Image (cartoon, rainbow, N blue to C red; front, side, top):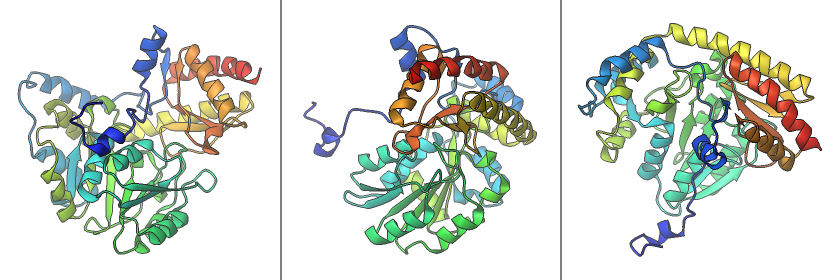
Length: 367
C-alpha cells in the first residue's frame, strides 16, 4: 500500500462496481457473441448523432467548449428550463461522483435501496459517508420506507432511481411528487432518471427546475445510444447546478461527445423508432422466458429482469452458463432480487443468441 494515500482511501477496497465485458473476454480468450449485460443500446445511436461525430472528427485536435454551451441550450429547450439549471458531466456515473464530493462530509448519512445501482454507493464510500440501505418492496424501490429512513437517520442524501435499475420497474409520477413534498428540510433527493427517455409518461414527475431539494439526472447512454461518448446531465436549482463548476474538469467533455449529444437531442423522431424496436424486443424476451419456464418482469427500460424462480446461487449458475456460451448478461447483486437475471434488449440477431443459449445454460444450472 502506498504511504501517500490518505487513511480513508487506503482503507477502501480495491474494487470497481462492475466487471466489464472486456475483462471477461480477456479472461476467456474469446469475444462475446452478444453483449447484453451493460444496458447499452444495441440499436445504435441516432443518424444525426453519428453524422455529427464524423463531422467533428476533423476538429478532435481542439478541446471541447468548457462551458458546454450548445448542449446546455439544447437540454434547456427539451426541458423548458434555463441553461443555468443544467450541469454536464461524463455520464450519470461521473455526475453522481461530483454530487457526492459537493454534498457529503465524512460521517454524513445517505439512504438508498438494498440492491440499487451500486456505483452510487461506490461514490458515497469515497466521500466517507455512511450508507443506509432499505429493502425493495417486491420488485420496486420503496419510497415510503426510504423517506422514513431519511427522517430517522437525518440523511443528507436520498437516492431513488425511476425507472429502476436493476429491476426495470417504475413508480407513477404522483408517488415521486409525494416523496418530494415530504422530504425532510435537510435532505436532497438524488432522482436518477437515466432511463427517463424510455419510460412511460406516467412515470415522469412534475418537479420545478428551481426546487432546492431535488437534483435529477439524465443520460445519453440509453435512449440515444451514446454510452461510449460518456455524456449525462443534471437538472437542479441554479445555485446547485453552478456548484458543479467548482470541482468539475472544465475540459472533461470531448468535442466529439458534445457534438453527438447536441445532435441527438435534435433528432427526436429517433426515440419513437427506438421505442417500437424495444417493444418488439421485450415481447420476444417475454416469449423466450415463457418457453423456458421463467417470468419476464414488466420493464420501463432497455432491459428486462427475468425471474428464474430460484435463489441467487441458481441465477449465478445460469449467468456462468451464458457467459461460457458467449452471451454477456448480468444479475442483481442481493437477495431476493438475485433470483433474477438481467438481459439488455437488442436487435433480432442478439435476441436469437438469447433464445439459443438460455435453454442450454438453464439445463446445466438445473442439473
